[in-house]
Image 1 (tube, rainbow, N blue to C red):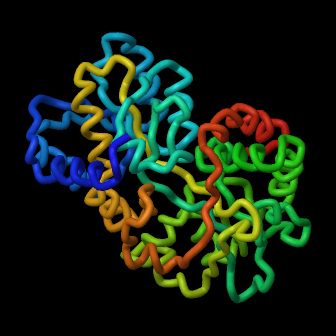
Image 2: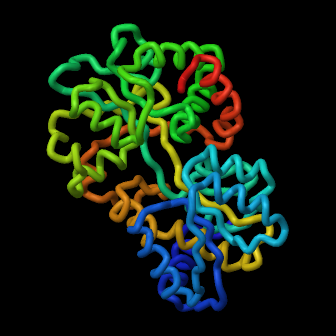
Length: 337
């Protein structure tokens, strides 16, 4: 293994363009953030590699890669979350990557056990609550199923990848039986049928439809940074509860990427993944899109840091990914729409 200082030097050389590369990179991305443009242009300027982007919903991109087969032009699949990365791997759409830079920079629990995908940014799955009405918010995810919160909870549908991975992590930590009891309890406590995205769950608190909501951290952090209709003007009424701080810690959803199984430009693809692990890119994930960096020690954006310090769950997400099919089965059994 190279030393940490050697790894840092290698990354600095990449960003400075001191070892300019040539050619192209075909990127299939389901990240829908305009702010990611900076990531792409900085990489192109640093390396001389031109990025050709195909953007779409994750499931559509995965289906496209399956249909294209060995003739797929895809070099990289960049997507959100562990469930989709695992789906792409299980479909044979990714390949193992041998990179000392990635091994050194990305924590082991945020890597696929076969090095077929890597996490580059994180979002904490947080419990939010109405500070005016809720004096005893759930301290854990399991607490969301407590009967005292009946009719109070807003949370997304079972088809949402964030919830699929959350339930898979509960299975990993507590077993399938306990996970099913939890899912049944949450359904019983819902203030309304699942609807909308994470921002809509937070807006539910503002409107009074619910008093407790589950959302990823960056939706709230975004409302601290800029005006989000129906939310930013009311953030002071919303409390933040990082779950399970005396146990496993807050569940972290990933944004990650892997090299396509039939990548025509594999070397350039690996360079792109290594760039995403650089300090420059990691800072931008926080400043540009209100996320937590995957690389430890990278400075947080002011609005992200304002959420507060917390213990993150360091469970191996490769193990969590194995429980995603069981999670979907449980959702179906308990009638979580």
